[in-house]
Image 1 (cartoon, one colour):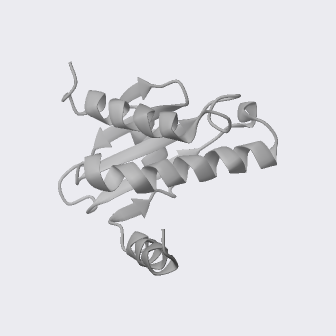
Image 2 (spheres, helix red, strand yellow):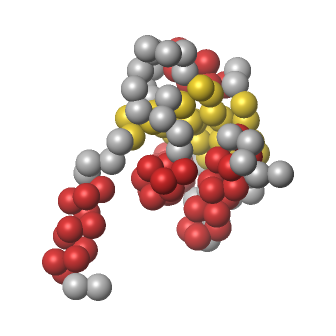
Image 3 (cartoon, rainbow, N blue to C red):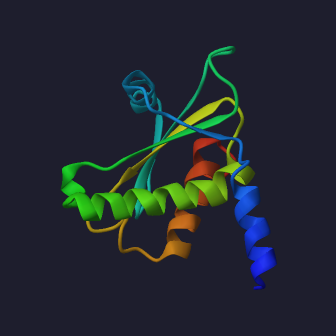
Length: 130
């Protein structure tokens, strides 16, 4: 890949229609909604009420069960990256998604497998997968 092409892809990534959840109440509402367990993480998703917010919103969390601060940060970085790559294509406008890291799994699972997990989980949460 040429450096010009890589720079273009990086600059396009800055304009993705994803917003990050940062209020505890948003995380709690997502926790009461649909959830899909995956090998590498747990996906929670909920459809927002009309007028609540716009676009796709996503949150990330890892408990201390995932490991020390280094392991938790690594897991969250990987979750952020798969969300950046997959959610603009497969996410639905008006939904909140929360990706929860799993101990011993999220930080060390193959990256392509994590992406596949998210694609399958999104299909299942939206009812497009049998």
